[in-house]
Structure formats: C-alpha cells, structure tokens
Length: 302
Length: 308
Image 1 (tube, one colour):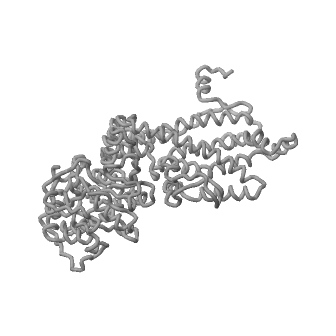
Image 2: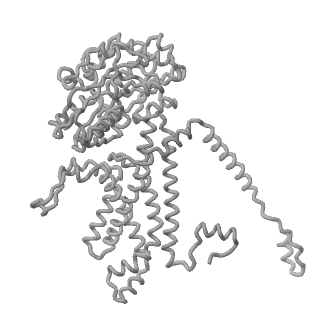
Image 3: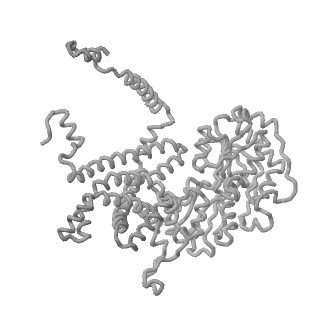
C-alpha cells in the first residue's frame, strides 16, 4: 500500500530500517497476545487529547475504526474468524485508551474505508494506509509506522522473477493498493523496452493474492514489507522474499477532515504511546519493530 | 335500490337512466402521492452534488469503462452460447431412454447447479493448484500431449468456464421443460412418418419447444449480464471492476457505482428488445396473427390503419 515515488522524510531517516524482515521471527515471539510475558505498560487517558476529541465521537464514548482485515500481521482475523487481531488493532485499542474512548473496529473492504470516513460511516481508518498526497487531499494522516514494498515468489523462485525482471510474468497484487501503481508502471516500462507486459492479477483481498502465489497461479506478488515477511513465515517455506524492500514510506491513521482538532488529538495520543513505551511493546509483540518511528507527524510532507 | 324496487313491479316502466361515470377518487390520491414522491426523488437526484453527474459523464465513455462494457458483453455472449449448446445436449441426455446418459446429465446438473457460481469461478481460476499439468493420451497410460494448466486455462478461460458451465446446468432444465411441453402426439406422428429420433428432435420437437424455451432464456441472458461482475474472483476485469477502480483512485466510489448501474440498465434494455422479437419469431406456429411490434402499434395509433 505504498506510493510509487520514493518518499523521504525525516522520520524515515530517524529509524534504522532493517530489511532483514524474514529473520524477525527467530528471536521474538510474534504469534499473538502477551508475547513478551512482562506486564503491559499501562496507558491512561490524557485529558489534553481527550478534550480535542470531537463531540460526535465523545458523546457515545465509542470510536468506530475501519480496517480491512486481510493484511496479516497488521490487521487480520484470529482463528475464530471473528476477532480482529494484529499490530494495528493493538495500537488502535491503546489509542482509544489514551483518548478516553472505547474503540470498536469494523471490518471493511480496503477501498471503501476512505469514502466511509468522508460519509461519516467510520470515525477513523487504521488499515496500513501508506501516506501519499492523493490520500492527504481527502483525509488527515497521522504517521505511526514505516514500511516498504517487497516481493515474494514460490520457494526457489522457479520463474526467476525479481522486481527488475518481471516482464512477461504473472504478478499478484491487492486491488486499490499503491503496489498496483507500482506494478503498472513496471509493466509499462517492459512495453517501452520492447518486452512482454506483466500480467497483473488484482485481488480483492491481500490473502487472495498470497494464496494465488502459493497455488502457483501467479509467479510472484508484491505488498508491504511486513505483510510479505509474515506471509513467507506463515506459509511454512512455500514462499520466499525476493530482493530487498524499497520505497520506504510512512503508514498513516486516516482521520476525517471534518474536525481538524481530531487529527491533532490522534497525533498527540500516538506520540504519547510512543513516548510511554506501549508502542514499542506492541510492535515487539508482532515482530515488526523494524518499522518503528520516533515521532507521530500530522500530514507529513513527502 | 330504486331500480331493484321497480323490477319487482313488472308493470312500471323504467325511468330514464341517469348515467354517471364511475368516479375514481383513489386514482387522484395515488397521482398526488406518487407525483410528490417522484418530484422529491428527481429533485434530490438533480440537486444533491454527491451524485456527481458531471463526473459520471466524464468517465462513462472513458477507455477503461468502454473496455469493461465490451468485456461484459462478450463474456455474456460467449457464456450464454456455451450454456445453450451444452444445455440442449444435457436436456436431450436427461430425456434419453439410456440410463447412463440420464444419470450423467443428472449428476452434471446436480453438481453445477448446487454450488455457488462464485466458488466455481475461483476453482477454475486456481485449478492449477490441483493439477499442475493436463495431458491428452491413453487413459491411465501414456500421454501424447501435455499442457501446463496455467497456460491452458488463463484467466479469461477460467472466467468463461465458470460462467458457461454453470449456465449449462440451468439451461438444461429450461430446455427440458420446453421439450416436455411439446405434445407427445407430435413425436408419435413423426415416427409414424418414419423419422428417426434425432430427426424428430431437430425438425419437430425442438422448434416447437423454442416457444417455451425463449422467454426464460432471455431471463438467463439478462441475469448472465450481471453475473459477469463476479469474474473479479478470477480475477478478470469487466465493467464493474473498471468503474470501481476509477472510483477508488478518485475516492468517489458512489458516482462510479451509479454509472456502472446505468450501463447495465442500458444493456439489459437492449437485450429486452431483442428478446421481444425472438419471442415473436417463434410464436409463428401457435398464434393466427402475430402481436404487433411496438413500431406497428405506434403507426396504427397515428394513422388508424391496420398493417398490411
């Protein structure tokens, strides 16, 4: 879910982004729950931010947050197919505590989340949104994580696909993500270079794209680096990461523009989670500390 | 009451009839209620900027949308063709005296009608996970030619197999109903004339069955036009997908959904006209005078003359 153009921000530079995401599961328990075993850092509602929460949200005390639960380990369904789990979900819950409201996550198709924020159906969007100018035009974005794009292919990469050499291959991608633009641009390059175009299979869910590659229907897939790393781990050696991740860019919490104070409240609360240590704990539980940031920025300029 | 009373006295002559047209106050109420509702809807559709008609018009004839329309149309046509041809074969098999053929046709219909077409589309799309290669050769023996499943069944073929094979199961039942509707005396007369079973079927039974078969087939075609939107499961990109892609990119999904719906309505309208004329064609054998076409009816209304 990332833009094609490389986004360089101060906060990206501030974080040492290790690209060896495949190894992240070896020394950290990444499954779920209280992975570290130590009691979680408590989060208390901060009256300063809670006061900025719009009345419409504070009134019923419930914050409706939309997410597309097909994007493990960031946001996905637990084994019961009902409970939403993931790094995003835990962060959202902690965010609710900091804002003094109860968070209620709702599963929604990825491409319906931002329109839902505009129409007032949802009050926040947390679904691994890569911050890009187009999205910032319609919603406010509060950065909270950094991820790149990486590629995966079936083990041993039988078709010898790489991001630079995908012409004539079949590549799976989730629809409406920034990776669609990425792969479309690559396909156009192939045509311009006189080579065969890339067959782009756009799936409604990221999990469908992963399944298609495992089944051998597609030769490779591309998605956000934590998602690809987790898919490789979960499929038990059927997939492998190809090359390094690229185009590091921040994830943002999408906040409706209707009330500008709300975005400031979210930004302050996320910053409080980072400073208080709860943030690091959650990232650690899901084995995605490589994408940690030190500051939460409101509408960061690329 | 007064007329009744008068009738009891046969001697009395009935007075002049006071003819008053029957009043329909209900109609006036309905006109007002529905008129107001229609005005409200029209007003909101025109004035609510969220419909974004200008944006819809900008995109309604853009290349991706037109490509989607063409894909939807030809997917419908080819899938229906597969459905009709296979459906006729299956219906004839089901009515055959041969129990093996009957059983096989029954099994096919049971299987393809009993599972969601969405699931069938996904299965055809990922059949390579079951069979990496498909070979032609001696059963259980040597293979002469081997195909890679993925090259043999690209997305477009998976989409057509999913739609067409599912449709065949439904068409088989429609055709069977049509054949059963033809009076048995027709086949008996044909065999008395020395016609073979196949010739009877081709010359006598099927043409008469068409009268019953055509209306539901038109129904199925219109249904298929909309079912093609499920091929996104393959994935294959038709009208709805391309319209939604524009909506997603611009964060204006709603106008694009309306635009796609208007396209579907336009296409079904054309199909309905086609169905009318096909039905008229096959009605030849059963009605003495064919019903007038809308054009003929209009002409009659304005000139008052019957068609020659």
